[in-house]
Amino acid sequence: MLTWLQRDSLSFPPLAKALHDPNGLLAAGGDLSAERLIAAYRHGCFPWYQDGQPILWWSPDPRTVLFPDELHVSRSLAKALRQARYQVTFDQAFAEVIQACAAPRDYADGTWITTPMQRAYLELHRRGIAHSAEVWRNGELVGGLYGLAIGRLFFGESMFSRTDNASKVGFVTLVERLKAWGFVLIDCQMPTQHLHSFGARPIARADFAAYLKRHIDQPCQASWTA
Image 1 (cartoon, helix red, strand yellow):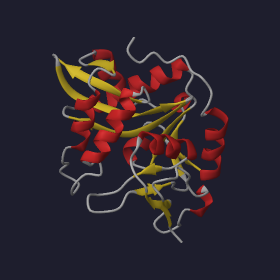
Image 2: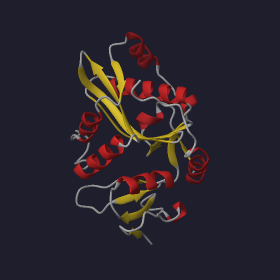
Image 3: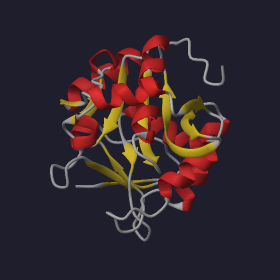
Image 4: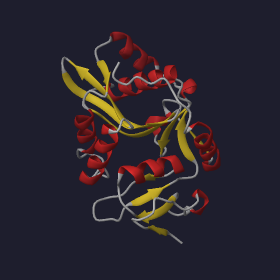
C-alpha cells in the first residue's frame, strides 16, 4: 500500500516498502521544502512526477549508479575533450542550467522539472547542496547538468545539450572532479543507454542504501567555485 506523507513530518517509509509495479514508487504527497528534499535523498528516494500529479517519491530496485573509477570515455568523446572546444565551469549559472533542463524535448511530452521543482532546487543551491556544471562555447551556454552533493555522494538529476557532445563533456569533467574530491558514488537513479555508455550500472537497492549509510555524513574536499 502506498504511503501518503504528512506535511508535519519529514519521515519516509522504509525503502523495502516501495512498490514493485511501478518499480520503486515509495510514497506520495508531502511538499518540496528544502528540509524534506534533503531528508529524501539521505533516505534513498527522490521526487519525480508530472504536472497534475501529487508529488511522487521513488526508490527503484535496482538503482543505477556510476562509480567514478569505472567511468568509460569513448574514443570519439576523448577526442572532443582533447580538442578543448568547450569550457566547463561549476556553479556559475545554476538557474540557467535547470531552466534549460526543464525545456521541452522532442522525444518527451511535458517535463517533470516543474516550476515548483525548479524553485525547490534553486533553494537547495542557495544552501550549497545543489550544484551545476555548465558547458560554454564562445561565451554561450550550450550544455550542462545539475544534482545534489551530500557527504561523498553526488545525486545526478538532469542534463541538457544544445550542441554535439556538450553535455557529455560536462558530465565527464564533473565525474573527474568528483573523483578528485573523494566522492565514491554518483546516483543516476534510472537506467538509460546514455548513462550505461559512461559505465553506469545497476546495483541492488539494499547495496545503495549501504553506501548511503556509510558515506552520506563523510566530509569531502569539494570546492565548487574554485
